[in-house]
Length: 182
Image 1 (spheres, one colour):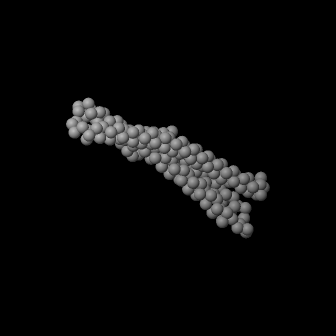
Image 2 (spheres, one colour):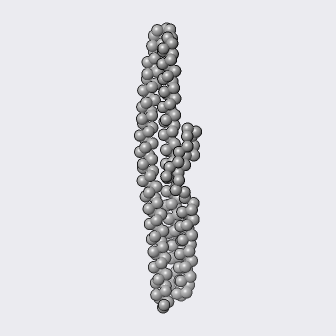
Image 3 (tube, one colour):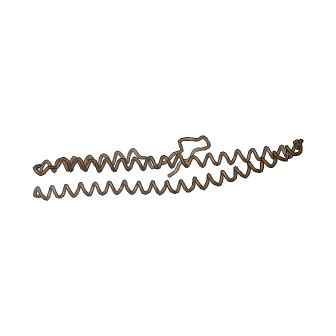
């Protein structure tokens, strides 16, 4: 194979590699963003329902307290109602806190997405460094070496990034139960 054909083949391999790695990372970014949107929708829905239920329970508690105040005497049935309402309030607060766990998982997804973008930036920087090393007076053997080295660097960066980023999102905060997603 002539030097020009060999060089052409290696350039094609490099560009294909950059394209493949870039597209793979961008696909992962799109997937993470879609998952983030789903999580945010679920979190907002859950939090809204929990806070409206909490508000309703507090209003009922206030009505019972007003009855106590107006009567001057605390009947046992009213006391029991207050205890039941307090338990209901605690349940709704716990549900709201559980909903906040989605924020934690969403933050992890967003962080992963940013790491993928940084990884893509590193890949493109490596390609840019290659372009800076190629001069008009460089011979074919030197270009071939640069291409091989750059391709190896790109493959290593892509593999390192993939190994760094887990597919599972875990709850890291709040003590109201463990959640694992994906």
